Length: 249
Image (cartoon, rainbow, N blue to C red; front, side, top):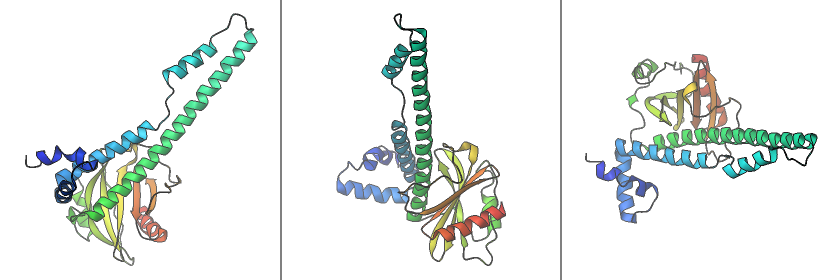
């Protein structure tokens, strides 16, 4: 009940429309309130999803009507000419549909990568980056049982430069998953694990990452699960940790 008055102002806060002093106070509250910070992240993700959806191409009713009129037989034209026009219109519609599907998939992939980066940044900024604090994989892995609808393995880190800090539950557009945090020479690396079939967009292991991404990232599918490794370390370090997870799985 205490946070109801804060949550009523969340949209104003996220849009940056409040007075500067109120924005500063609100920012301090959100950083220290798990409920409000989770609500704020959910609303940011919703706003981004709406923006992406608005960019996808959908033929207008006027466009469809014009195509249907072009496809209709003309009394003064020969059968051959009508068939040619119909075929041309069909090609245009198919090409438009394929283009729309390609653009939609590309924007969907970029949206997923962007949200993974946001989750990683939010963790770095949090005063409590993990819910289960332990360097022992045999403590961290059982903590997720009953909290997420799948199981996964954690790698053995002996003779490596990585150390486990702990883990927490996370969500990618309402899809529950595991978020693990590792240290490598004082740099934090996030490892996210989700069910492949529950993700909002179809991903490919060889899909190019967005050029605007300011972190190194690697993603792959294994055993029905989708893994993401992201951090501000070198691409070689990201690849090394990813290989340990691939071996453990």
